[in-house]
Length: 488
Image (cartoon, rainbow, N blue to C red):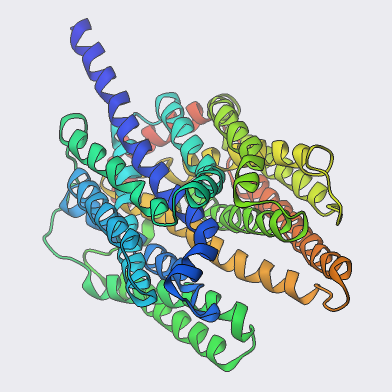
């Protein structure tokens, strides 16, 4: 018996290694491509206005299909969808690396985003169903959160080295051997699971409306940075997106087999976690974006130097993600998440003081270290909160929802902060004046992010429950064990 328990425990952690490798690859890809954009523009002769689509095509498909991917995992099998998404992601990565034109690269990036949308929620739902809710799952999510939180910073570092010493194609080729290795290992270490369904219906109308609505929302955010927030195209896209999302809610209320069961929003921790996750996505995306621009355009860092500079954040996230899960288990999600967002607010407030002639160790290093702590205490607790109390049959859709909230929040936050920074950038004059104008815009952008972090801390403090994680789990177990509560 003891030997069997040790074998099962070992298999759990091997399964986690496979899941984390895939998750890290997906998160890494979001940031690693940004560093390679100048080389891609030169080699494939991209028009300046079209270059954004290398990032946007991925983001639109990835953000738009996450909910669909989560529910498909519940219905058709989480391991099966994990492997299918990983195969699609890896194959599209290979095609991206051998792209011969701007149109081919944009198309393959969209396919890659779809693969990520199938893969990411399936991976998180496998973790959720493999590890028991409470301290065990929190430990697993601490490791998963280290991969998610450090992937963006690691992407900048790897992207700089690969682009400088090999070519931009290798930022895509890197995914192929990792994907093949994970696909080969998955059947041996991952168990198959799916939600217990008493029907064979699939909510096609719900899938169509929410996928189209979220995709249009992400696209509208992308266009807003170019056309302006009050331009006719942006307002039209936002209106159509709102109509589609409204139609989705109406469909879900009547569907016998909803894509997103609205009852899960009765869990206050889930609702608050998804609202906070959207803000955290905006903070993370925008922070890395503005810092990269500041280092390269004002301080004159190369791609490799910028990547090395972010190592402080990467290592801090990895170390403190484990501390964060322990804090959640002992003190509760509310304390950990509120503390994390307040630390991130302090880090961002330091970034509002970045000067034109900044020095790395005096002006950036302290803020980067604090930012790593804040991100670790944000990513891990918000994910735990978004999955706490969720029924096993809803594991996939809850995982898709928390991923979608973070991704859509990132798109909205990045568009808003980019616009704010551009509006406060002073143009004209010689090189010194240009650097000063850019720095002023970045400072105001960091100020907006500071306010966003404080708002997230307020939401976490007011809406998340005060109980330690173990006590909350015991209460939810008692409620789910009551058949009258379950029927209600």
